[in-house]
Image 1 (cartoon, each protein chain N blue to C red):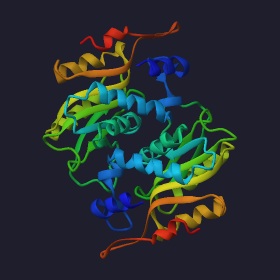
Image 2 (tube, one colour):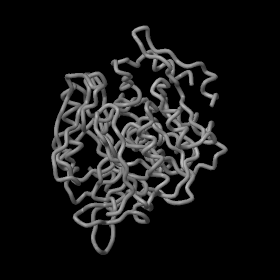
Image 3 (cartoon, helix red, strand yellow):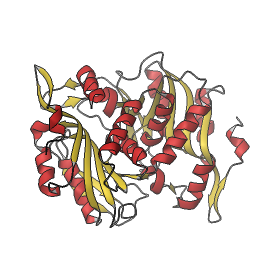
Image 4 (cartoon, each protein chain N blue to C red):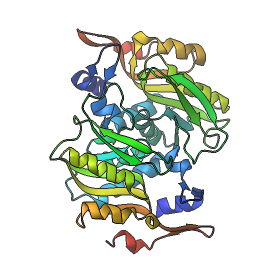
Length: 200
Length: 200
């Protein structure tokens, strides 16, 4: 998706150790017009899958996920990392290693909002190692729901997340990233060839 | 805003001690179509204020804030509660008591995304005691920005937040809530008269 790639080249900053800072349009400040366009792109790519619900993880998945859900006209559920007082006593919980924190974080979903029979699209800001998304897949499956697609804004293909997800999801479930970065170095950010988007 | 009030009456649950659970459309599962409509309503009510930025607090403010920002076509910044590695060493930080957690939480904004001269709309899901929004006002003012309006989805008028904000903001800054609850008891949820929305 060119508009996203252009923005990454213009404002993204490589902080080293594979960390890409996109705080000016995704992670701290959010460009709602760009997120809206990304949501529409997800809806277009996944339009024939009969999606009934979008699932993401708080915090930075919420922006792209709510816009995908708006375009698909379905509810979005965000997995919580801390249990608020409004959550029931019995929830689905899994843990996932945090890329940027160096610790395990909890991901919790109430069975009230994720149930058997749902056809779930998982959306997140980044696909790196895939750890968070693997956690969301476990939550969806624990609820008896089916993950029918995965969409992320930015994939770092050199971190192997796509293969890890593919192993768990099988070859039929599409994984789409709107910008795929194949290399980050002093020389700059290199995107994978456009054709890679479709190659699976 | 009738569509929001209807939803609160249908799905909201009074958990006691002033806690209203709206996890099925605002706080855990989000209805993106409803949030989009709420965003448009905020944009309509505040259209003449020259807003340049929307400010909210993670996590549950993000949904309504991103939709208000979309309607206003301006960026949205969400104050972080934990400092990610992508944040610079020097940030604006304040603390605010958490209604549902019984502790103080940090609210941080990077000076990269909030600066002098900005005309800020603060958006949040709830206006209760006003503590979180007061924290956001302190952050905006520390950055030299001007808070020109406050918009919330649901106000619990019996918790006094409106008066607390009014004292700090002065009478010229509009505070608009799309649903104002004047009473929550065994007898049910009672909304303040519609005219209250406009009465200040």
